[in-house]
Image (tube, rainbow, N blue to C red):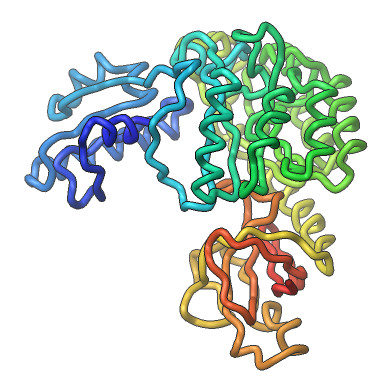
Length: 432
């Protein structure tokens, strides 16, 4: 949005190596994000000192939250501009930074919830939703440009419309978006707050073919004691009932969730309850974070702060458990045919996934990638591509390595017979 506005006002958007002015859009949600933002600012200041760029502008949440302090610390930065305001009626001029075949569509900003560990409301301010009309216009434009997948985003998309329409309106929005999607085949929902998920929303996701059967629903914990302290407005029992409802409506659907370890007051008993919950409910996608003590939040002042060593040990335990679960779920997909969106062609070496493409220990072998190819033609005639299924969000989840005897390009959809599975990735052969 920032670059789109600049381009509209006559600025030329170029690669950082060619730029006179470089803008870094920062995050300050958790400590790791702040460190990454600071490191990037320092790198840009060094480039300015060497005369490779003329100006450095720091934008986004870090500047919004700590602008005055940063100005004192980094005098070489030319401006701190904070976060842009979302306009309800506006269809913003945007410069698409993603590949041409997928895009992100922000439908709301900030959050209605007051989770005790989260600083988002302090940074983003009052919750605001865009109108259905403005979002439909944006999606129609993206559809006309040939985009194949849109990812609906916001800090809490399930609260969409509670300000402007006085009721949860995500299901209503989705019904309108489906009508204008001609080229767009996937609509993906990212960040659904569990206590705001309605029966109608579940029904719309389940019945609409263009909506991915994939729900990103951060739960954060399952112990009633911790959920109460986190101010999540949902109980253990309500969480279980919600999951069962979603599973019943979408038996083939995938659930992504995240959990926090080491929240203040988390006992070993609380942690073991969470561990058992993850094993019992077998989520397809799980992320785990250690609790980050955030200035200005209720949790920062709570008693019972958990030592970093224990937080990390608990995180490692959960991720080890989930790795086993994920492997079992991935293996259950072998032999199935999945619709895959092609992202890019693989490395020049045929039949081999390069080191660094995925985590060590889960590289698809040449034999695995060629297993179906050898039944049809010379395997050397096949090329390898990287794609995603509807169960894989871009830059978040795993990928599907695809062997194809016909040439494919980014943005193509293809049916893939899955021949091999790894903890987070799949491999297969194009069959259509």
